[in-house]
Length: 533
Image 1 (cartoon, one colour):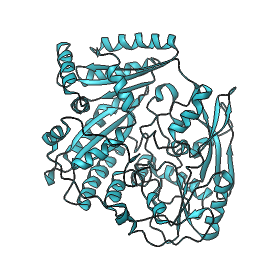
Image 2: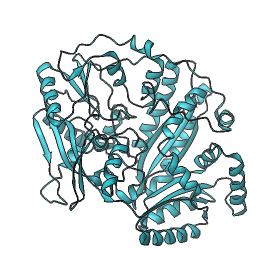
Image 3: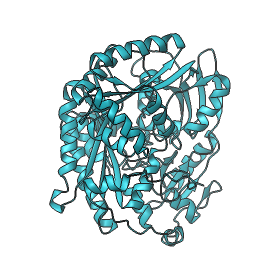
Image 4: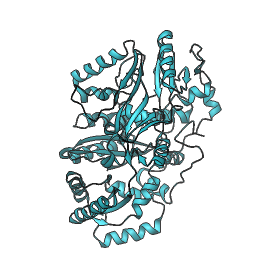
């Protein structure tokens, strides 16, 4: 059973690693947990529904509660306190495109607001109901979760848009294929959500971001069905797929997604390397990607993230021996860990491994084999469960991510971390901040920063701390050549900062596009564009 007030399966618990409490207390002080509301208490606050009756729509209080929030930190605080604030008035669970079209007709007839819902994993407010005079209908796509077609000649698979990552891969594997799209939210997020938010998977160096994988599909709009054919390439004007990628539910509801799949690889392995410092590590990473060494993934942790990962690994004796070995090889305080994926045919993997080892050696990298890489791969989708663990210890954790050109990486990285560390100084509150480069390109990379801070004495105070950290750093990012989001999308949390990135003409273009598909403003208002209902 999925947690009603947190991440993932309620049966899964992530134990606090040995030494984690002492590690965090030494850096940001002791944590003081806040009391959690019970499900019964939360349900007692769900107001009466305003939804007109429809056979595809339920107005049950628990369905509405479970679709009221995503997974941002404000969502987490709302769920834990039981004060959700706003709820959809009804939830629908369509099983086919025709039922989605019927729900959109119903929304027009009854003047409803409509919110598409995939896996509910948004960390920027995509699926949160707006304050609205109109009833709000959430359309949960979870029952549209099947492989509908597989064109082996073209290597194009068609899925229901509500198919989550594990089911998608499980349905492809017997046919010998993979999509290869593995965001950290893989356990719950859906293929339709990946397209709507322009998602990026951890092994995008090999498989590409979702914009490279998205071949076409079917969008149900308020004005009928919009079909996107699968073409390998076209110069027939602007690519209309780009209208759907990143549209975040403002244009319609994606019901079928056609994706470009790849045969299962012959070999896959993950490797760890430690560098004496950031300069050698960042230079090696840039060289690997600019020379197009055929790797599937490069993840580069800065010194604080490396220290944090080793401290929270939960195997102090093994880490002690590793530290001794690395120190003997010249990687001591300030060392940075790189995790690399090598995926493909055995011949290509052998060549990639040889070139990878040569480049990291030239940058004083200490290769430590595949053990740490395997451990990372085993736990890469369980990381969101650590928020539950930290919460019980009295700490809040959140992330910020962006992307910028290589010449700006160090400057922006340093500015982000400095701002987060100092944002709560007037409250005498310390923030633990660490960063990795999670997706690399020849021209630049993404910067993914995690920050941990102690909970305040109450929920309102904790939310106020988050707002200061998030908002000041988001504005800093977009005013310093960073994008407001590399992979999480815009949602409602990032919408106020989008005009700085896009400019007046860009925003006018987006508003005109949304108005063309949705002149009454009923499709996910407030998301992507910070407009009012």
